[in-house]
Length: 364
Image 1 (spheres, helix red, strand yellow):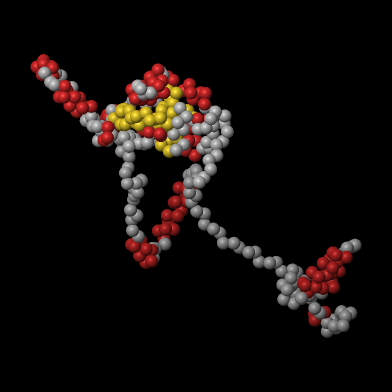
Image 2 (image 1 turned 60 degrees about the vertical axis):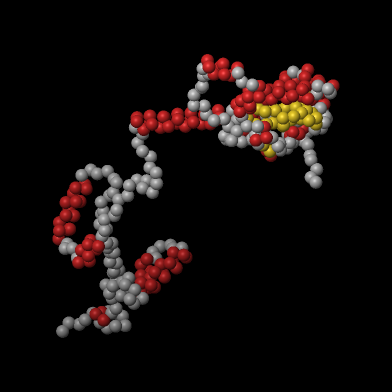
């Protein structure tokens, strides 16, 4: 029997020696040459961890076990929506069709498909109550005719309002209010016509009074009307202020109605022409009959017209030459000529005199 060689170790037979690499041997094999202290500590810790049982880092042969490769589940490539197609979509559809045929439909899918309802399609703008119609030539012509008829109707109403009569009481002002009287006007009359009639009325009332005789010698251009604290130019008509409801510092300048009233004349159906026998009959009328006929043609009496009960001191007729001499004195210093662009300032603006100085009023 051959003698077994001596292993030279504590164990007589090399078959019983441990085949695992110790931590010390691994550290010696890894640390060859000069090493820094941090590298040495790191490699010593790795060698110590690999020598622990169950770490899986070493095998009985001293080889490190290779970790198993982690396989990720491959995702199915879905069909791209809205992208460009280069023929790949047809291949994917062909490859998917056998899979669909091979997979049988379950009972739950059949039940789900049976319970689905068809969604009711709604018209565009179905929530809008009044939908616009297509504008054809006939519809456009009808709309133009409707606008034209409405325009004519509005013009007729305004002409009737212009012909409506009203009463405007006034007072002459030269530092104090002097009773002037009442002027009968139409709402379409100009301001200068009111001043002319007021001048004549003042001359008639002042026949025996020297102070009032001066009004007969004043021209219309030298007169002006002051309503509140607003001087109204001659070229405006009363209908303008009524239609626009123009305001001054103390409210609306003229409060008469801009709609037809009981004093509005009826629309004439046709113009009547007098026959020759009618002319002869008119010559045979007495003076009382002619006066009664003129009263019927003139319209309702003054007491039934708008403005008959208004305060005459609200409307002042002033001599412009006297105003130019006295406009630095209050209240003439607060008068301003009417400007349609300053109507908002009249409503809520600060009162100023002709020199631009603010006027303050004490509250009582």
